[in-house]
Image (cartoon, rainbow, N blue to C red; front, top):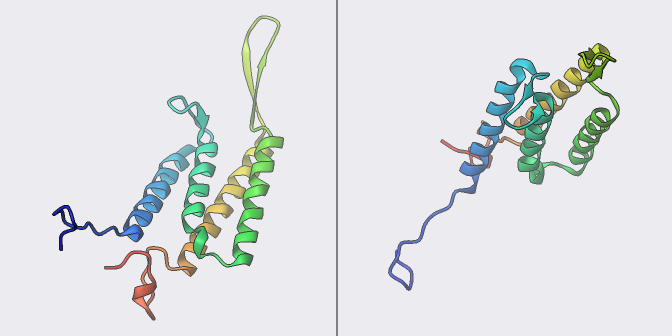
Length: 148
């Protein structure tokens, strides 16, 4: 069916692009999770910062489907991680009188951040399952974001 200019109308499947975005972000999280405390010189950031940003991007993509309570709960979890990152250093670079650099690693903070990010991802993926992002419902496959 053509339009007034003789061209064909394109169909846009937003669900496909949302699922691709989610897959891309979670794939990036998987790659960065090999060592979440590695520094990425290309992006000038630690992997844990990139993981947090990528998971938040996934959350933004699925947020329209969340209930009010789910939204409040996951935003609180996100806020807790942001606060933790601002107030709890993982590394500290020290320079002594001879200009020799050493690095202090705060193991307790490192372990807690690892747990916070794991739980954040776990909850986001649980919400994705509950709201059938990428997984057709056995009861109603038409509700899935991406369908076969």
